[in-house]
Amino acid sequence: VVIITQGLAKKILSDYDNVKNRPLSKPHLEFLIKECENNNCLFNADTIRFDNNGQLIDGQHRLQMIVETSRPLIYLVITGLDNDSFKTIDTGKKRSGSDVFSITGIPNSTQASALVKFIYAFNNGRYSTNRATVRTLSNSEVLDYYYNYNGDKIQEAIRFYANLGSQNKAILTPVLTSGFYYLLTELNKEKGLDFMQKLCTGANIGENSPINALRNKIIRSRIDKNYKLGNVELLQNITYAWSKYINGKESKNLRVPDDFEISLEA
Image (cartoon, rainbow, N blue to C red):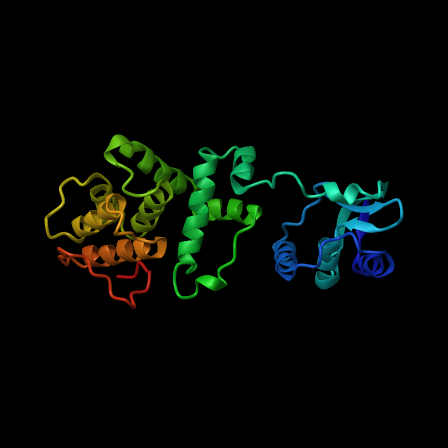
């Protein structure tokens, strides 16, 4: 067990042959630096590995992270591994956000993890013109956001979809159903619930309601092979229908403007 300081990390990277590591990935390095800055680099028995010829075969990104952040971290250092052992490194299944949720004991771990990622992406403009700038959350960040978004409210949103049962008829995916339930009821509890219940069940909708127009478009996209709604287009239609609904406007045919920005602002 070794405390790797900035100086030691520099020495390892400069003094030891590094030919058996992957090329340095800038996005992965930036991800590790962000994790370190968020204090998510806790000792978990991750290793810095060398083969029996003294070649560094695992750990270059973590060492470079220490160099760039100047933060000493604790790692296991393993030496004397078989020269061909680098071929077997990082070949297992990567732990997912839902795995972390399950281990932590969070109910409905798969749904909860997916829902947190959707809410984060939506709130941070993943589906807007800025979508290329929104990064993926790490597992530790997904867990943090679960609590930041109120875990009880996340579970309530998951139950909303589950309680629809056969009424839902798969009008929207579980993530979109639970996600928009969460987002809309955060804005307006009563109207958000009304909007989602009517959209999902088709009950008690006026003929000229934007919810009815939205529902008809979604159903058509599922049964008409010549009419499809892409993911971004679907989100545009949902948020456009919401803006009509929340402002009390009727809309027998939902025509989304070409420049409409996906947003829940009234």
